Amino acid sequence: MPSTYSSKGNLKFPDFDIGVGRSICLHIPYDFRGGVTELKLRLANTVKKKGGKVVVSYPAYDSRWFRFLRKEETPVEWLVRNAGVSKIEAEASIQNLKRSDIQTSKPLSYHPGTPRAFLGICAALAEYPDVLIYSTEALDLSGTNDVHNLVSLHANTLCAIHISMAHFHGDAKPAERICPSKSQCLE
Image 1 (tube, one colour):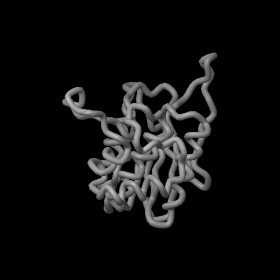
Image 2: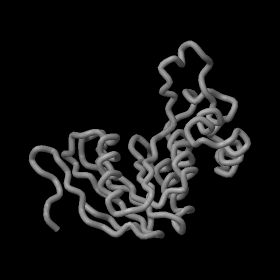
Image 3: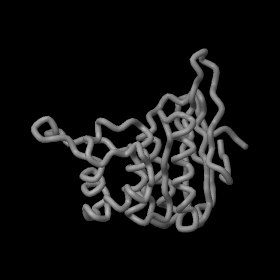
């Protein structure tokens, strides 16, 4: 396969099928210097040209600039605001996750990365996408596998594209990629 990475740091996405039930793991080169947010948006624009509704998942984060004037959002409040669902639907969605690490009464800032990733995927799935683009950056092995398992539960209704960013061990050696099961890996 030809290189998808130029010396200037620009990625050229490989061509792939986005049919329902497909799982794609897009391996980003180890020397890529760009940000994952920009990468997700560029990939979404590329995939939109193929047709279908494309939704990008972002971990839950209270980005309201005036948050210091108000009490912090809880996971339920964040999901209501970002998924456009009712409070009852948000509570049910969180309860269906069956995760003890999502404390609905605690502020969002109390929660570590994996629960925030789960909330972001719940918000994205509430939009009923044909294609879901997500990543597991900054999650440990257990969290990454949990997120992949959550997405795989919806595999029969969408195409899932995982952006696999490079990770390194403490000794600066590249870490092994953690891909969703049954996914097609692309460089």
